[in-house]
Length: 242
Image 1 (cartoon, rainbow, N blue to C red):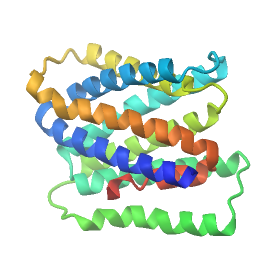
Image 2: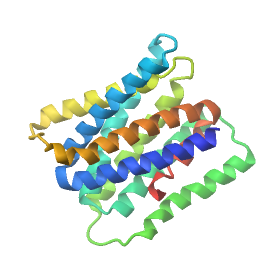
Image 3: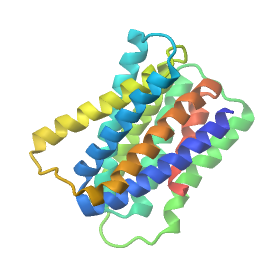
């Protein structure tokens, strides 16, 4: 079940990043991130109300907020890289960081994957890198490459945080993560003083990025209930393939 949920999260994250990256080329990364965050936060808290469950713990909310701050920063960096760099390179570079950081953290926290799982991780990491070879690379990649690396580090922290939030607090970690993402995005938007008005017709792709990103986060969160962090994070990091 954990493998299925992690692969579903990879599909959804891939869809979210593609639609968000395309929209960022037209509207700018900050506008797209803000719209996506608002939509995802509304859906996250609505899902929390529907699912119900126990009340929140400080542990779950704290890890959720920390994940959200990292996720918000990572999303902005990724969209900026996709908007000004090569999508076929920026996405895979971010995915490698998103995979390596949780693998190291999982081992440090005491996870000991079996031989087959280790073999899968060792195969998946270079596979993520090789996804970049499927697209043509033209022009200078410096800025986009840096954005991809920074986004990968942030997403790795996001994956670790959601896994550490635990499974006994319902969807409170996810709702808190979405709130943290929205807060950091709003703070950056206020500080930037950029005009953020977006025509209603142009809000479709950013909203779609928020919906699929929210669904991906829920799928990954539940995947960590059934799989080790090192395995779930690597599978989710296959998202550039989609």
